[in-house]
Length: 242
Image (tube, rainbow, N blue to C red; front, side, top):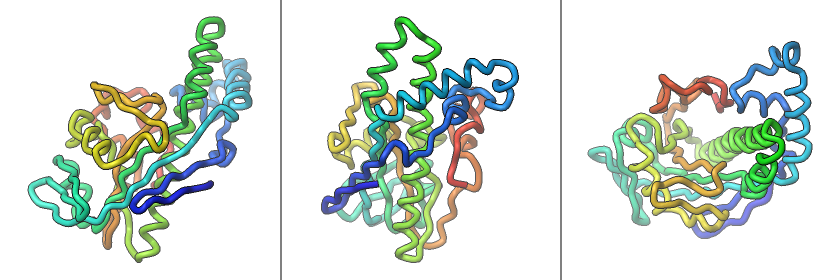
């Protein structure tokens, strides 16, 4: 991992092979059980392996992290010493007690997505496996970022909160996404957002992590806090720090 640091933010750049992605990660990102597929549909294992071999060199995993000192938290509104704010019911619940907040943006890049578009016309199963590799890469990036912020907290003898993303209960995409993008220079890692707050490249994730004494991260998957908890077919299938 390499990084560059500004006054308040840092860019982390990861070697794709550092993410340790495997065909099983690809299949899990598609909502499948690798153990069952090995006996019932082994050709899908082969396709996932091809996707990993060809797709890893196309990944451009990087993250942007900005640490902000908390000034006040009142009425579900958190204000920072250097200006800017976060607001929402989930902010008041999950970030209560935070002394700092890490505002985070990470992406697996655009090259793999371009390859997916090219392959979709003549080999859809392979294209879907490549797309799942991008999803798996973002899951692996989440773990890397969470651990990095945890180390920053440990240097001060503090702990970290749940990784809170726009779209979780109490912090909608329409509410959280503009707040995050007002606090980050997303162009530093080649990320843009459109009028509907969808991010490009598509395999990009935004969020915040609280840092402070006595904070308690979630001990299980964040699914229970997600607004799609009752309907998501991928519930419980993503890796998580807990």
